[in-house]
Figure (cartoon, rainbow, N blue to C red):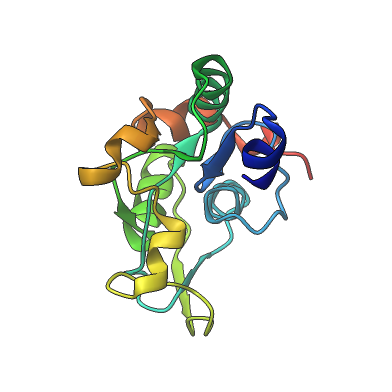
Length: 160
């Protein structure tokens, strides 16, 4: 923002949230790619904590459309690009099992200390906030989570 204020440089700041889509690296640490690869390999899906922490997942096509929209808009300042629908990690795990047809089990591990959970003020760092008063500073995704995961294809589309 300093470059914009001091030098008049055209800037656009994008905040992205839990992007997923084809060709993600299998070991990138993202929950969607982790779950899909584990399910497709027939391995247990690793859920941290009780799986009650919420996330808003954004399909990569929506992410790209949002970035292009920002570039074409002339808006300055942080713009959230995300999906307003929040899901728990446990809901995501069940959805991935359903979409992939996997019979993998769920394994619960301790929640990492730095993992934001619902109700925790820092949980907003994992959710796009594309609702309420922040709507005007947000590009909302159009892909429903199930559609995006189906479109995402098989784990063979993930780079290993």
